[in-house]
Length: 76
Image 1: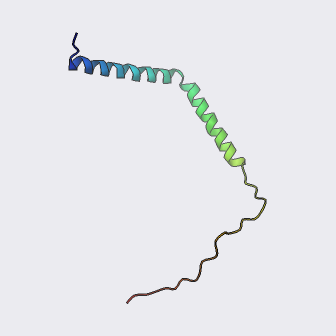
Image 2: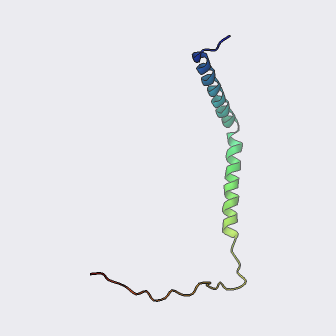
Image 3: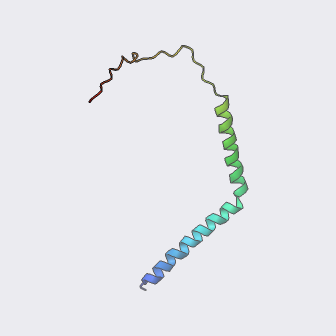
C-alpha cells in the first residue's frame, strides 16, 4: 500500500492536533496544581532574596590603583 502525499499530510496534521489537544486538556485538568506550585516557588524565591544580607568579615579594598589625571587634548 502506497501512502500518498495527502494521506501523509493528514496524518501529520491529525497527530499534531491530538498532541496539542491532549496538552491543553492536561493543563486545564491540573491547572490549579501547576499554578499553586509556581506561586509558592515565587514566594520562596522572593523570601530568600529579602532575607539574605551579605556579611563581610573584612573591608573591601580596591585592587587597582586610582586613575591618573587625564590630559585633555583639543584639536583645532
